[in-house]
Amino acid sequence: MPRKTIAHIDTSALRHNYRLACRLASPARAMAVIKADGYGHGIREVARALADEAPKFAVACIEEALAIREAGFEHPVVLLQGMHSKEDVATCARKGFEAVVHSDYQLDWLEQASEVPALWLKVNTGMNRLGFAPAVLNEVMGRLENHALAQKMVGFVTHFACADDATSGFTDQQTRLFAESVVAWPLLAKSAGNSAAHFLPAQPLFDWSRPGIMLYGASPMLEKTGPELGLKPVMTLEAPLTAVRTLKAGESVGYGCSWLAERETRMGIVAIGYGDGYPRHAGTDTPAWVAGNRIRLIGRVSMDMLAVDLTNAPEARPGDPVELWGQHVSVDEVARHAGTIAYELLTGITVRVPRLYLENGLTG
Image 1 (tube, one colour):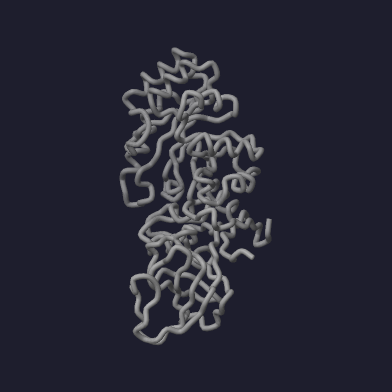
Image 2 (cartoon, rainbow, N blue to C red; image 1 turned 90 degrees about the vertical axis):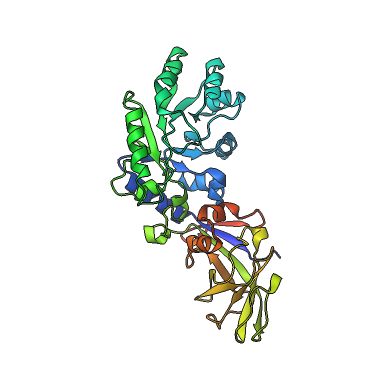
């Protein structure tokens, strides 16, 4: 019988979060970003849960877009990194994908193609990863027009670098630059807003927003958790207690003897570790939850197990499920203790952990 280390995925929470994104984005529409295997939740299942809600999906690359088609969904799919090879142009055209164009070599491929997909043009407003500088947009648009490609244009996109920091003025700077850069093409759509932008007061989200991490219940904002923003956790990561014992004062647990009991301590071993994607750097004092009580990790996380202090959970017994993050412990809290972000934790859960899909708490 397999161990009961499971990631429970609540699809009703996913829809709640998408609907919140829509309300915050209005009058803009929201394309659901389901890249990175649906942020670790399963791209096919996430697409299925949002199929009747989201008018458009967004992914990073063509493999993810093809997975959506293979699952039977015909929604428009935006490829945020665009085409990685010349052959991708025809595939995008045949499959109904919308490709983001960010470089001259992609323009070369489009000019040589007999089939061309719907296109978005990426504008680099300061993120400085991908995109055309505002100063060359006239030239790029002229090039598209010369090859009868402008009719394939859906619109323009940009990406915010500091929207997670409500005190930063850089988002305002990027917003103004984006609006000024594309003013000559008023009939084309504009998309700029990532998850964090939905929570910035008076932030323009133009025509299409792109909610990602917020759909999965984690916070896109610094110093905030998902629940504090009205989001519901979609993934609840659980693993069973496999052993319970009492340590004497001065005894240690785990590799490196990094934690010593200051007094007699009831502790437990949980069947999850970094081999499952739980962060190794989440050490002593990282919160967890068992038997109705918050508890804490102690010592180092091993590949297949970790230790917890059961002082606050005297009723806990072997076999009890321990919540590592989810309904009672925010994934944002765990990320903070591990010195990382919730994005990495959610996308890092390995294939060794089965996903169990639930609808309002019932197995789906």
